[in-house]
Length: 223
Image (cartoon, rainbow, N blue to C red):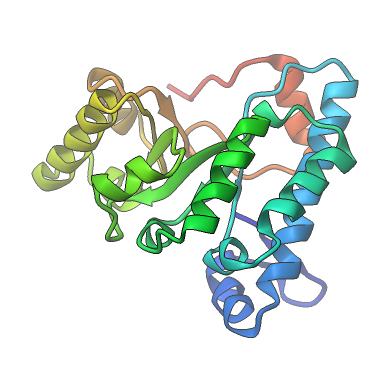
């Protein structure tokens, strides 16, 4: 998620300003800027010969509803010259409940270009398997509200295990968000969660420090 580096108030979390941006419509300009900036960094790293992983960018529901969403994303990919297969767009579950034919077609056309799609914060919304099948979704991201209680909270453990099993049966990748402890990591490894994300590995980094990690080629969680 994007952070706002305010000149007087310092770092402002997305929870504090994204809802306002959504309501005002500024999220369209912010989202466009974030995607373009991310793609430019990807291009820079590619030109330096770095092996970059897939880069995920959050996309708001308002962006997805805009009539020129497909053209905007395709133009940024062409402008920056990135490998579209390295780009992942994170969707909210709520957008899956709006199965507009044109929107679904736009997603499939972007997928044809190479762009990947994931459902962010999975388990907190209202999506169903019938809606997931209509979109070219490749990954489910388990919301950190379920990860936080692992491994001791039985409900969280059960929900997490069920999501991992369901994703596997559907041929989807799964990633757990918000992993902060070794105990959480070990539980997720035991349940065969494919990918892990969270402060246990790294906090959000500026591009220069991210480049250092890419050169290193690995992140080792603390013991």
